[in-house]
Image (cartoon, rainbow, N blue to C red; front, side):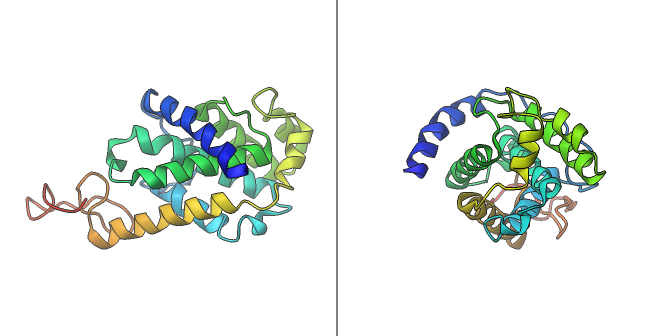
Length: 210
């Protein structure tokens, strides 16, 4: 039943994603100095939610950080032509994951990812600094429900997140497949860190695969 509801949300969310402008540059503290923020966000969330989020229980700062990364990657993939090879099925799984996580931590269904990401990162920074009042101020209603201190509390007790674990794990597997084939990021070969490799015309332009 819950998955059926998430699928209904997905239909509306998917249409909205296709009409959005290109994603803005990611905040500096989303994934540190990673060269490819979408790739780094996928791998980070796959690790964070590998156990359905059990490792994040009682860790509101870590959950806020991981939630920001999931929000960013899910919104950026359909807007970044370098990620066109990402299968549509995995994109749908990520949208379902975002809906599940939003429901768990109280992010409004209609909230724009470009606003949610910096809010969650601000809350994560404040919580790491031990400033819960600043974290509460970073999570205002109606974007967060109920907002404020109650939303900070929800970050510490989100419960199991099976769809997030499935979707981020599948996305990470696809990144690994792109790496193995050397053909992700729009038909450009990359090294193990996701940096584009200059080939001087030797196999790096067009061709089969990705």
